[in-house]
Image (cartoon, rainbow, N blue to C red; front, side, top):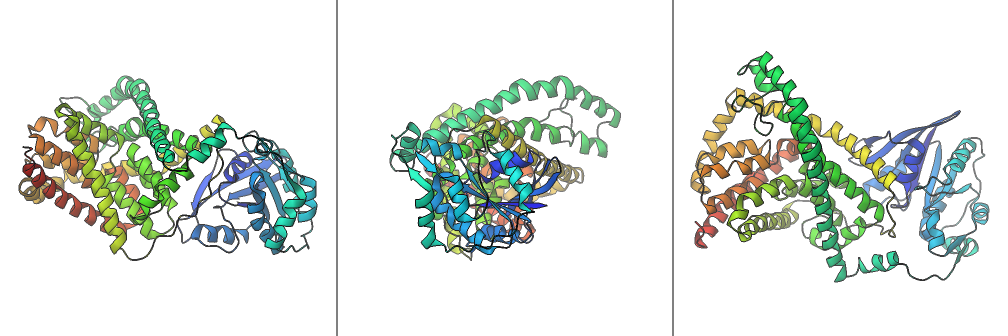
Length: 574
């Protein structure tokens, strides 16, 4: 049996999906698109079924690729489960009546967020609604699991039930149905009601957004650094490093296998930030450097999603992103990229249009520094004064905005408007957030880690074949004459392909002037993504678009480095 969960966006479909299937989920792209849907399996006694959670849709007459995929998947289902927000019955019933009028599939209506109806003073006559619609109606609360057992019982009955013959008119009947089955009671505004109004209305909404974003980054950094300092680094130092050193002794330094697997030894020891072997840097970077921040980012992101704040943040930022050819949801890959570019690159999948995805991915790679790189920039220039750190970040922000503006102006095609549902605030459920976190971390390990390892293998092979040295000779004139930097910076640029934060740190011992440090740190942020991000973007954009993106990155790096160098000289910074 194949069961399809269908409903408006932000009605709790995913929560019901996880209640039915558990945590083992397969995320797939619909053939010929980048639109994702989730697939899982449920088994209760003699009932075995495949459950599909499709993208949210408001109608069976699609207005986007995501809605089109949702409608197409209906034809493949044996049973339809229409998830309806019980606190917004009138809006949700349009899709319900469209599904009823199809008469092709057994249908169950699930009133979710049932616990909130009491808080909002909403009373619904479930039996009366069931009679009016002519289909089974189940009330559930995804967070507590209330009503899930009843839903499973209805699913078992659905295949045996006769198809409905009742045809219901749409808009002219929705009001009549709601009037008959729903009663509203007076209640006083709660604290959450007040906050959800203030957090969407300027000017307080912008202050609230700033507080939420800054607080999120503080918590993310605290969790990420805690994992690195107290779990990851001790593990590699005391347990993994001795094993890697034994393998190094067996392979013998200088050989091809040693170069690929272990990398270069630094004073006879493995330095995970500098060795660049598959089994050294290739394991340390994704699991000890990137994973802690990805874990903390996804945890906070899940809490923001479940609380209902992310759609508000997307609406607030929509006007700015619209000037860049994007819509407000571009705030998600941007925020993720500030923690780690890899999950930011993966999240560009949320864009339906190829043009949007290209703009978002290019801006992320060019002008959104990850947290580790940002920390190294602060460490490099902070001793000279905060104003010099600000110059680098202002440069990156200016490039982000100006480049996005020109790409929006000159790239063919158009970006769709943002169509987004703003749900009510809810207190996140910890168990649900942790389940979602586990799914995302598993997804990251399967999607990103193999690409990091592949990138390190390729770079090591190029090092071994002396191709990297040749590239250094080719780009030396640009580095010294156009950017005004010493030729030793070429080594940092090459290392930046693997680790941008390490590359920024490599500028410090080069005895560079303040001006050169500012130019060098800015260029390292712009010129190319790290290997992990690069290979993720190749997969997301395809080879053709990635080549275009690389051309834009390198053009920006050459021009911005030259302009910044001249401006700093004019400003008296030597």
